[in-house]
Length: 204
Image: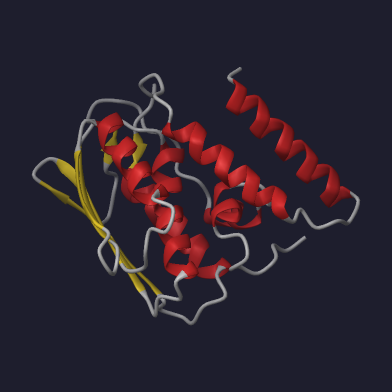
């Protein structure tokens, strides 16, 4: 177990202990987010299974739309029918999109747009709206592009925008797509970590 993984496990354990005692996790979620981001930015062995980029993004956007305290339509998601297999960690894909959403929430963006489609034997992901205050979004997207053997175009002047092209990883088994409900209710999962402070409390 790496030092970052061990630290993340210790923070999650402490957050869970506090929750059982009826205490709010408070800054622990923020610390978990920072440690998780650092962990995901480290190189990792190639995944055994391909991630279904379309399925992952559909589930993530459905969960975010329900969790966020924002008007209906704040997050516009246009995701093609999958699957779109890519050779990258699903957690890295999720974290990159969630970091982008957090930047948009921090700056009070009036709305954001996510588009995922298939083009020329690749998954093409486009993100527009918000800012990238800490540089986490661009860093996570760069790591995602390198891991999947793809390319990234990003611009952070004014509104953040990025276009990511990830080659299709055909022929590999697909990782099961998460259930949006599970993403919503996991108190220490990636959506709660990255959207902390901007979403409703999960149902007990």
